[in-house]
Length: 237
Image 1: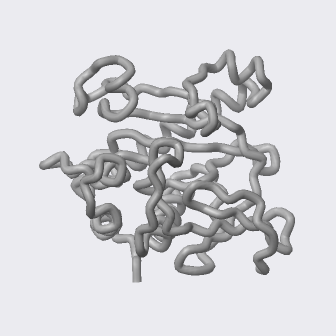
Image 2: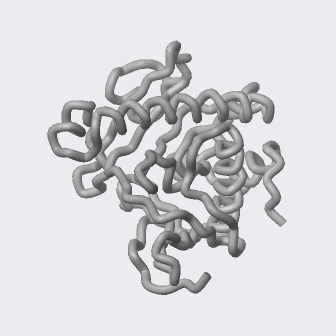
């Protein structure tokens, strides 16, 4: 599979076309950003860790019957994926209150949310990813009613699978975001699942082991990602 032109250069990944029109290559860079790109740093090994972490999670989700764009790892920092027609929304599930929901609703960080909350956000950095609802998605033709229902169904199925997976590793899955696209008419999980796009806390100490270490200047970002990977059994060699 030959890498060809750059299609998208995002905040932490670069997407390349290939000689197969149905496949893309995702290159996980060492770039780390927060606050819509206002804070950016290079962190050694981060691209490799996130790439391998994502591959591990996507294969777990595939085994649970969740369709993903993952195809195969092709390098330490590159993965071959199916080319999706992306739906421009983010699906966010929160099991524990943290981040923006604390600021927006004035609730206490660490509050267990039962049942978990579900939120849609428009994927648009220039607008700071505003919260939207089903009616916006339908009115602007971003997705159909069936696709909205399927995204919700898959997002909660991911929650069921990963909450238990992380629990076995002594971790709390606080919240996470997912992105979906269409592949051969089927709603399919795209983008990535890594500590960049979720919050993970140690179950006993509630130490933060995710991108909040970067956002909040706690240090040890990649080391925390590697600890999580090690607990899960992700091969980083």
